Figure (tube, one colour):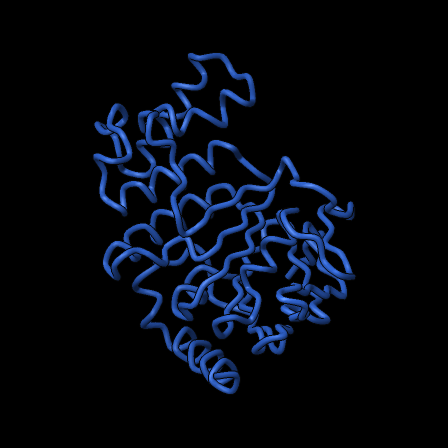
Length: 257
């Protein structure tokens, strides 16, 4: 397998919080590289600093020491080429689905005709054709999540940072949205750092799964997902190698619980 150029690098990261005169260390000695076009998932016990790691990479939180770099440049502010997808879909309630998805294209100063053409392409891709003039409050949670994903793909970042984006969804909807997202991602092949509690989800999506220790969070293990792409998001769970990886990751994670 060819070595991927490094897109994101986290070096010797130390992150702490001060509260009521006491300092709590959230992350310590964290080192991680994400290659160009690589999908890396992070799993770990609650409170281990998974979301804190994303906040550092997104430029929203300054570490006590160490650094995060994108394309070998230190992150000192919110980078303009990183896309974030949170548990909350963060849609603008006063804008239609079409206009929510158009928003990154407006920022890019594309012509209105180009905006609408690209937004409609993404709407079809996420299976929401016919809902483009609806508003977020008129949609189900799963449909709103599709809109959020389409908006992120419209932004077309070089790195996707995803903080348990499918967490609030029911099991069946997670499978549907996960399948759509996997197909969309495989079409563009951008780098992803994905936070999840779901080991099956991590293995189904990822090239590599990273396991973090309990707080202060450290990277204690990494697992290469050597399963051929493209992958069927649900059916891959019955593959013997999938089950083996799931068991190995679970055993590593359960030591921390």
